[in-house]
Image (cartoon, rainbow, N blue to C red; front, side, top):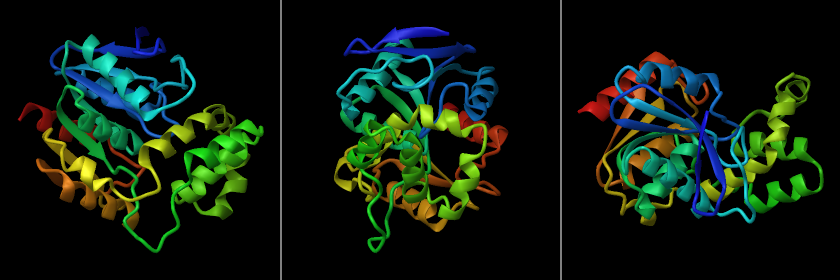
Length: 260
Protein backbone atom coordinates (compact mmCIF):
# COMPACT_ATOMS: atom_id res chain seq x y z
CA UNK A 1 0.00 0.00 0.00
CA UNK A 2 1.11 3.52 -0.84
CA UNK A 3 -0.49 6.88 -0.11
CA UNK A 4 -0.83 10.22 -1.82
CA UNK A 5 -2.10 13.49 -0.32
CA UNK A 6 -5.05 15.22 -1.93
CA UNK A 7 -5.43 19.01 -2.19
CA UNK A 8 -7.41 19.26 1.06
CA UNK A 9 -4.88 17.17 2.98
CA UNK A 10 -6.79 13.89 2.82
CA UNK A 11 -4.59 10.83 2.41
CA UNK A 12 -5.61 8.48 -0.39
CA UNK A 13 -4.39 4.87 -0.23
CA UNK A 14 -3.57 2.92 -3.36
CA UNK A 15 -1.86 -0.20 -4.64
CA UNK A 16 0.48 0.09 -7.61
CA UNK A 17 1.37 -2.82 -9.88
CA UNK A 18 2.87 -3.50 -13.27
CA UNK A 19 4.82 -1.42 -15.77
CA UNK A 20 3.80 0.66 -18.74
CA UNK A 21 1.31 3.50 -19.28
CA UNK A 22 -0.61 4.46 -16.13
CA UNK A 23 -4.17 3.20 -15.62
CA UNK A 24 -6.26 4.36 -12.65
CA UNK A 25 -9.24 2.27 -11.50
CA UNK A 26 -12.17 4.19 -9.97
CA UNK A 27 -14.66 2.12 -7.98
CA UNK A 28 -18.35 2.77 -7.50
CA UNK A 29 -20.66 2.35 -4.53
CA UNK A 30 -19.27 0.19 -1.69
CA UNK A 31 -16.12 -0.66 -3.68
CA UNK A 32 -12.72 -0.62 -2.02
CA UNK A 33 -9.40 -1.40 -3.64
CA UNK A 34 -9.57 -4.91 -2.15
CA UNK A 35 -12.73 -5.62 -4.17
CA UNK A 36 -12.06 -8.90 -6.02
CA UNK A 37 -13.14 -7.42 -9.35
CA UNK A 38 -10.67 -4.55 -9.16
CA UNK A 39 -7.90 -6.78 -7.83
CA UNK A 40 -8.43 -9.13 -10.78
CA UNK A 41 -8.53 -6.31 -13.34
CA UNK A 42 -5.35 -4.81 -11.88
CA UNK A 43 -3.64 -8.20 -12.14
CA UNK A 44 -4.80 -8.71 -15.73
CA UNK A 45 -3.64 -5.26 -16.85
CA UNK A 46 -0.34 -5.20 -14.97
CA UNK A 47 1.53 -7.08 -17.69
CA UNK A 48 1.10 -4.07 -20.02
CA UNK A 49 0.24 -1.13 -17.76
CA UNK A 50 1.11 0.46 -14.44
CA UNK A 51 -2.13 0.10 -12.53
CA UNK A 52 -3.23 2.37 -9.67
CA UNK A 53 -6.05 0.74 -7.69
CA UNK A 54 -7.19 3.09 -4.92
CA UNK A 55 -9.59 3.50 -2.02
CA UNK A 56 -11.89 6.42 -2.60
CA UNK A 57 -12.11 8.80 0.36
CA UNK A 58 -13.96 7.46 3.36
CA UNK A 59 -13.23 3.84 2.49
CA UNK A 60 -10.55 1.29 3.23
CA UNK A 61 -7.24 2.90 4.17
CA UNK A 62 -8.03 6.35 2.74
CA UNK A 63 -8.90 9.29 4.92
CA UNK A 64 -11.92 11.57 4.80
CA UNK A 65 -12.41 15.27 5.38
CA UNK A 66 -15.66 17.14 5.93
CA UNK A 67 -17.51 18.77 4.36
CA UNK A 68 -17.80 16.50 1.35
CA UNK A 69 -17.84 17.90 -2.18
CA UNK A 70 -17.59 16.15 -5.53
CA UNK A 71 -14.74 18.53 -6.33
CA UNK A 72 -12.72 16.94 -3.49
CA UNK A 73 -13.04 13.52 -5.11
CA UNK A 74 -11.90 14.97 -8.41
CA UNK A 75 -8.87 16.38 -6.58
CA UNK A 76 -8.20 12.90 -5.17
CA UNK A 77 -8.10 11.53 -8.70
CA UNK A 78 -5.92 14.45 -9.79
CA UNK A 79 -3.44 13.64 -7.02
CA UNK A 80 -3.19 10.07 -8.30
CA UNK A 81 -2.80 11.30 -11.87
CA UNK A 82 0.05 13.53 -10.76
CA UNK A 83 1.62 10.59 -8.92
CA UNK A 84 1.28 8.58 -12.14
CA UNK A 85 3.28 11.13 -14.11
CA UNK A 86 0.85 13.89 -14.98
CA UNK A 87 -1.66 12.04 -17.17
CA UNK A 88 -3.37 8.67 -17.04
CA UNK A 89 -5.79 6.28 -18.63
CA UNK A 90 -8.85 5.85 -16.41
CA UNK A 91 -11.52 3.19 -15.87
CA UNK A 92 -14.61 3.96 -13.81
CA UNK A 93 -17.22 1.38 -12.85
CA UNK A 94 -20.84 2.35 -12.12
CA UNK A 95 -20.88 5.60 -10.11
CA UNK A 96 -17.08 5.57 -10.37
CA UNK A 97 -17.68 6.05 -14.07
CA UNK A 98 -19.85 9.07 -13.31
CA UNK A 99 -17.05 10.46 -11.12
CA UNK A 100 -14.50 9.90 -13.89
CA UNK A 101 -16.74 11.73 -16.36
CA UNK A 102 -17.09 14.65 -13.94
CA UNK A 103 -13.31 14.71 -13.59
CA UNK A 104 -12.88 14.76 -17.36
CA UNK A 105 -15.35 17.65 -17.55
CA UNK A 106 -13.37 19.49 -14.85
CA UNK A 107 -10.15 19.18 -16.87
CA UNK A 108 -8.39 16.27 -15.16
CA UNK A 109 -5.49 14.98 -17.27
CA UNK A 110 -7.20 11.85 -18.52
CA UNK A 111 -5.81 10.66 -21.85
CA UNK A 112 -8.46 7.98 -22.49
CA UNK A 113 -11.51 6.99 -20.46
CA UNK A 114 -13.56 3.81 -20.13
CA UNK A 115 -16.79 3.80 -18.14
CA UNK A 116 -19.04 0.87 -17.34
CA UNK A 117 -22.72 1.70 -16.89
CA UNK A 118 -22.77 5.04 -15.06
CA UNK A 119 -26.05 4.57 -13.14
CA UNK A 120 -28.13 7.46 -14.43
CA UNK A 121 -31.88 7.30 -15.02
CA UNK A 122 -33.39 8.23 -18.37
CA UNK A 123 -37.00 7.29 -17.58
CA UNK A 124 -38.73 10.53 -16.62
CA UNK A 125 -41.61 8.65 -15.00
CA UNK A 126 -39.32 7.09 -12.41
CA UNK A 127 -38.80 8.68 -8.99
CA UNK A 128 -35.54 10.55 -8.42
CA UNK A 129 -32.59 8.64 -7.03
CA UNK A 130 -31.86 8.99 -3.29
CA UNK A 131 -30.28 12.33 -2.49
CA UNK A 132 -27.07 13.06 -0.63
CA UNK A 133 -29.15 14.61 2.17
CA UNK A 134 -31.48 11.63 2.55
CA UNK A 135 -28.60 9.21 2.95
CA UNK A 136 -26.57 11.53 5.21
CA UNK A 137 -29.56 12.16 7.48
CA UNK A 138 -30.00 8.42 8.05
CA UNK A 139 -26.30 7.96 8.79
CA UNK A 140 -26.29 10.87 11.26
CA UNK A 141 -29.30 9.33 13.01
CA UNK A 142 -27.34 6.11 13.49
CA UNK A 143 -29.46 4.26 10.93
CA UNK A 144 -26.64 3.03 8.72
CA UNK A 145 -28.49 -0.11 7.74
CA UNK A 146 -31.44 1.94 6.57
CA UNK A 147 -29.09 4.16 4.55
CA UNK A 148 -27.71 1.07 2.81
CA UNK A 149 -31.23 -0.20 2.17
CA UNK A 150 -32.35 3.13 0.70
CA UNK A 151 -29.35 3.22 -1.62
CA UNK A 152 -29.78 -0.37 -2.73
CA UNK A 153 -33.54 -0.31 -3.31
CA UNK A 154 -34.05 3.16 -4.75
CA UNK A 155 -30.58 3.68 -6.18
CA UNK A 156 -29.41 0.25 -7.30
CA UNK A 157 -32.80 -1.37 -8.07
CA UNK A 158 -32.37 -4.25 -5.61
CA UNK A 159 -35.84 -5.74 -4.94
CA UNK A 160 -37.09 -4.62 -1.54
CA UNK A 161 -38.07 -8.18 -0.63
CA UNK A 162 -34.39 -9.22 -0.80
CA UNK A 163 -33.17 -6.74 1.80
CA UNK A 164 -34.19 -8.78 4.83
CA UNK A 165 -32.12 -11.70 3.59
CA UNK A 166 -29.18 -9.46 2.73
CA UNK A 167 -29.18 -7.94 6.21
CA UNK A 168 -28.49 -11.42 7.61
CA UNK A 169 -25.39 -11.93 5.47
CA UNK A 170 -21.85 -11.54 6.92
CA UNK A 171 -20.98 -8.82 4.37
CA UNK A 172 -23.81 -6.52 5.52
CA UNK A 173 -21.73 -5.10 8.39
CA UNK A 174 -19.03 -4.03 5.93
CA UNK A 175 -21.66 -2.29 3.82
CA UNK A 176 -22.87 -0.40 6.87
CA UNK A 177 -19.28 0.65 7.63
CA UNK A 178 -19.14 2.63 4.37
CA UNK A 179 -22.78 3.80 4.43
CA UNK A 180 -21.71 7.43 4.82
CA UNK A 181 -19.91 7.26 1.46
CA UNK A 182 -23.14 6.32 -0.32
CA UNK A 183 -24.09 9.98 0.07
CA UNK A 184 -21.00 10.74 -2.03
CA UNK A 185 -22.34 8.49 -4.81
CA UNK A 186 -25.67 10.30 -4.62
CA UNK A 187 -23.92 13.67 -4.94
CA UNK A 188 -21.93 12.49 -7.96
CA UNK A 189 -24.81 10.92 -9.89
CA UNK A 190 -27.44 13.46 -8.87
CA UNK A 191 -31.20 12.88 -9.10
CA UNK A 192 -30.91 10.71 -12.17
CA UNK A 193 -30.69 12.34 -15.61
CA UNK A 194 -27.42 12.37 -17.54
CA UNK A 195 -25.87 15.86 -17.16
CA UNK A 196 -25.78 16.33 -20.91
CA UNK A 197 -24.67 19.97 -20.92
CA UNK A 198 -21.58 19.18 -18.86
CA UNK A 199 -20.66 15.97 -20.64
CA UNK A 200 -21.03 17.56 -24.08
CA UNK A 201 -17.77 19.38 -23.33
CA UNK A 202 -15.83 16.18 -22.50
CA UNK A 203 -13.45 15.70 -25.41
CA UNK A 204 -11.51 12.78 -23.91
CA UNK A 205 -11.76 9.67 -26.13
CA UNK A 206 -14.21 7.48 -24.24
CA UNK A 207 -15.41 3.88 -24.43
CA UNK A 208 -18.82 3.33 -22.83
CA UNK A 209 -19.37 -0.30 -21.83
CA UNK A 210 -22.72 -1.93 -21.13
CA UNK A 211 -23.69 -5.46 -20.18
CA UNK A 212 -25.99 -7.33 -22.56
CA UNK A 213 -27.80 -8.79 -19.56
CA UNK A 214 -28.08 -5.53 -17.61
CA UNK A 215 -31.42 -3.95 -16.75
CA UNK A 216 -33.11 -1.65 -19.27
CA UNK A 217 -32.27 1.27 -16.98
CA UNK A 218 -28.53 0.59 -17.15
CA UNK A 219 -28.58 -0.04 -20.88
CA UNK A 220 -30.55 3.15 -21.54
CA UNK A 221 -28.17 5.14 -19.33
CA UNK A 222 -25.12 3.84 -21.18
CA UNK A 223 -26.65 4.76 -24.52
CA UNK A 224 -27.56 8.22 -23.21
CA UNK A 225 -24.01 8.85 -21.98
CA UNK A 226 -22.58 7.73 -25.30
CA UNK A 227 -25.01 9.98 -27.17
CA UNK A 228 -23.87 13.19 -25.45
CA UNK A 229 -20.11 12.60 -25.48
CA UNK A 230 -18.44 14.09 -28.57
CA UNK A 231 -15.74 11.41 -28.89
CA UNK A 232 -17.10 8.08 -27.69
CA UNK A 233 -18.30 4.69 -28.79
CA UNK A 234 -20.54 2.14 -27.14
CA UNK A 235 -19.59 -1.52 -26.72
CA UNK A 236 -21.74 -4.35 -25.36
CA UNK A 237 -20.31 -7.08 -23.15
CA UNK A 238 -22.12 -10.32 -23.93
CA UNK A 239 -23.40 -12.32 -20.99
CA UNK A 240 -22.57 -9.61 -18.47
CA UNK A 241 -24.59 -7.28 -16.24
CA UNK A 242 -24.18 -4.64 -13.55
CA UNK A 243 -22.23 -6.42 -10.81
CA UNK A 244 -21.65 -9.50 -12.97
CA UNK A 245 -18.50 -9.03 -15.01
CA UNK A 246 -15.97 -11.39 -16.56
CA UNK A 247 -12.74 -9.69 -15.53
CA UNK A 248 -10.68 -11.28 -18.30
CA UNK A 249 -13.05 -10.01 -21.00
CA UNK A 250 -13.34 -6.60 -19.33
CA UNK A 251 -9.57 -6.26 -19.01
CA UNK A 252 -9.10 -7.21 -22.66
CA UNK A 253 -11.57 -4.48 -23.69
CA UNK A 254 -9.68 -1.94 -21.60
CA UNK A 255 -6.28 -2.98 -22.90
CA UNK A 256 -7.40 -2.87 -26.54
CA UNK A 257 -8.97 0.57 -26.20
CA UNK A 258 -6.07 2.05 -24.24
CA UNK A 259 -3.52 0.68 -26.70
CA UNK A 260 -5.28 1.74 -29.91
